[in-house]
Image (cartoon, rainbow, N blue to C red):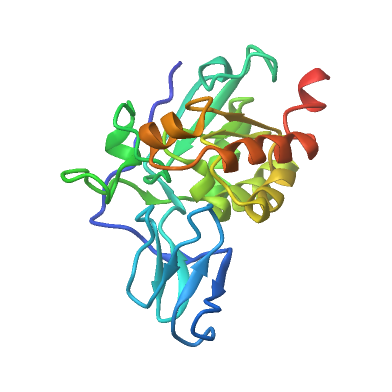
Length: 239
């Protein structure tokens, strides 16, 4: 479909306050300084000031968690079946938005130049700060949904909620293509904003899943059940 647009790189990440960060219990550090625990993905990185998480797009700055994923490296129109969704709004277009970063390190990833920023040598930062109101209006103008895909949308709850705030009044549905590696708290935060989620299960057993992704399988299966229990892409898909 037409309408491709890629954000122009502008030097490096734009950091902003992140959700799901807590003072680390180990050393009693408070919000004014010290370690923080990121509660977004099951790695639950404990970060001292100046440290960046395993994902490379969440960091501790002066005792506060920040994210670099309020970003659009890619924003283009394609068919919903390419997400792929086959039973949610079939035949409709979606405006797909992506920013750098992933919680997995799959060496076969076709989008590694986006997903493996900070984890693979030579992968440059690409992207500019996302503008949720403009993205929602653009999707509405094309009668399209909004999808977060290509890299890991689970790393962008802040952008997801901002997009939903602008998209909902326009009747624009919000969708994810995700690896599902999220904490229960993260699922509960974003599920009300999402019409449907497509989760790739990379392997059926833990050992090959760890070998392929660098992460355990159980949290992914738990997230599947949790999204389903909240009606995400379940009741709505059967309208």
